[in-house]
Image (cartoon, rainbow, N blue to C red; front, side):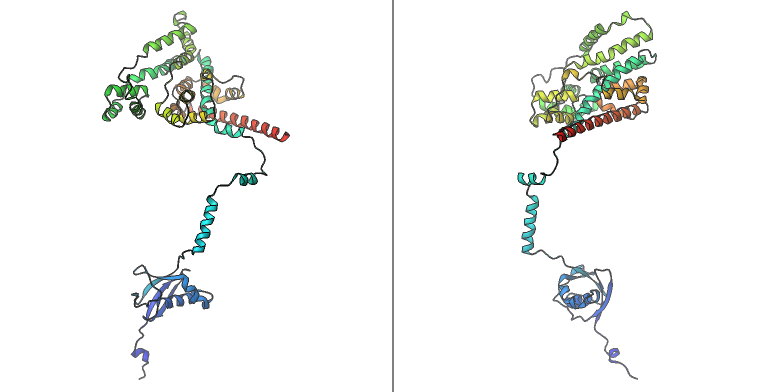
Length: 427
């Protein structure tokens, strides 16, 4: 019987599975004495279209042994690198480091990118562009300030119209009582301090009487009260109690009553009482606003750190009702509305007033006593706007007013832009 030599002396080669970058797998046999470079050349010869370039291309590839997750050295043999029969290896491209010449060129490119253009470069690049009017950009920047200021004017105008429509409504008497309670709420609610807020301040080391005073001055805000205590802790009058505002409010109401007529001159009917209360709502509001304005200490400090003088900062905060962002925009654009017009409504002859009053949803809302209550509360406490936007009775009205305002504002800015463009082209 004839037996081949291969059966008598079995092959000492080992089979290796090679996973290539193109996703294919190769099963090749190698002797343990073969180098890792021989393995790369054999694998590349099977996957490259030009097999003759496999030796040259092998310089850009490396072998990873999957079992140990280590890169194998090209000059060493498979036996020296610990490769065993039926092992799996990965054929991957090397990540070549850039040469010194490439590094220097990349560095020069980065410096060119980082370098800012000169005035000559800007002039050359923008020489062909048309001249634009900067007034439109300024109007866009100050749109937030305009909305904050004009929103107050719109609310005052809506209150004036609504109170005239509701003066003969028998259901309006209750809503007017609530409106008067809102006007007096800032002074009366300051006595109802939260025990948790006082405890938070006393836990920081502040005396209880100072904590109460700070909370009253900062509208029950713990963070603002803490900042106030840190800033005014060394003041000589820090321990003096706050004056009672009851007498002040009574004197203000007396002045308003003298201007608008007293209740004793009216009949005892609900209509006359409602009419009297209606005539006093805005007057009481304006008289209350004549009291000393107290800016938010934290916001005022931020504005002072920006370099603005204290008087301008206080005026801007008063105009924007302690809105720091709106006050900053007003100061940056040198926009200072006259203080005497802050509590006046919008011009009845203006297109915006006519557009608002011509809207059917607004007309229905002005006859709703709850909408009047919303206007007054938003005028006194702007942060309650989100609450009334969630109310099913007042939300549609407020949304329509906002849409009308922005539509009229956009139309006005568009007309200004067209006018400025026509003037520029005529030149």
